[in-house]
Image 1 (tube, rainbow, N blue to C red):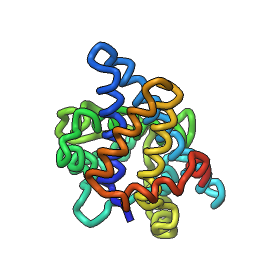
Image 2 (image 1 turned 60 degrees about the horizontal axis):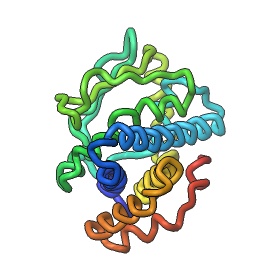
Image 3 (image 1 turned 90 degrees about the horizontal axis):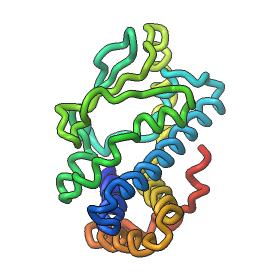
Length: 235
């Protein structure tokens, strides 16, 4: 089973080879393409979460968004996160990040940090199109001390109780493993690269695949090919 670093590195390599292919004179275009892929990926995650909540008869609200998260750390202590406040708006933070650690480990931070610009907002927007998650300051990958997010609405004491109860009820049943998440980032970002950069896409994706296999081996790439883009559209 794959881990967070597989997903983090797969994204960073697709980002890296997009920037390298377009060069310094087209950095803005490379950024635009990668962000389109990132936003589509986040939207798809949020839409799946909303589908699961609705299937269970739960409302589409902040507390259910927090309850139906699709991932958990690989092991205890890998991530550090918590709550800044619950009112007047709910704010959370991350002070230790497995994604940042992976990008630093493989010298991919300048490319991997593109992930941090929109992923949380895109997931929340996918969950409900008028929901807004606003980063507060720079993410850690961009030089900030920690990542902090404002979710635009309070999390009342009643909602906190419902969130805790729902998390206990769900356990890990709403979560996907990181083979799925790595395949999702691979297929979705690659799809956007193909649509936006048809002349360069094959070379970009092939180079990312080659580098990924060099780091993790064929056995940690082959399972990604068992998925298709449609697999990520539904819960």
